[in-house]
Length: 265
Image 1 (cartoon, helix red, strand yellow):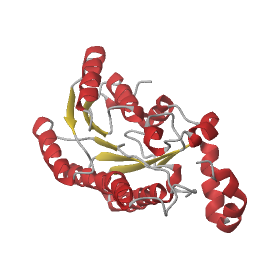
Image 2 (spheres, one colour; image 1 turned 180 degrees about the vertical axis):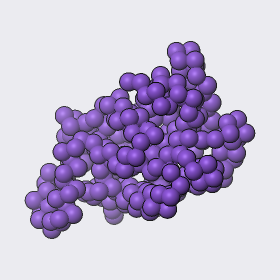
Image 3 (tube, helix red, strand yellow; image 1 turned 120 degrees about the vertical axis):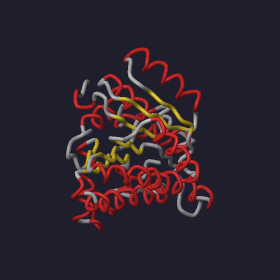
């Protein structure tokens, strides 16, 4: 999939060392975009950098970044702006989850999910907003989750973090509506990535929902297709998003009937 509008655009992707982050990077590079790839694993980023530059002859910069460290976020983005003048698109993809019942989740796990999924995302966004507002151009793409729309058993903390991402994104969209800056949220269901190596240590959830799992390449195509458009939300799969509509209209009924179906973890 090629998207001609991305040629020579500067795109920053967090959590780019694997999963949908790496797949988004590959599609953007194929479309001629210049990339800044961020992740904790510098070795994986360097391998991806070499691959993309060799195949597509685009400019790729990589930086090691743990988005839970807000001081490091400031340092890295200062380095980025020393290399490229403007960022056209920021993809906030870094995130993780741990599936436990609320009483089992440790304080460190709770803080960790919010530091990465929420505070880190906000901190990265705050670094690009001043220049985007000044230029009156840009796009923020926040990878949220269907869990941010429908909370399920054993995902109370993870769902809460993604609820926060959606709330932040919705407010941000209104703040930026007069500046020609688009805010797009991506709400996928379960994706076949290494996410579940941490989130689902026992493999129970993956086994139960395997037939419904999305492929990272499919999700990446949808994300890249939304770039430089006015797309508000991407909900995948579409049938799963219908559940969130029913949930808003009939929450008590949905929880009563859907509890067994949603208790897959």
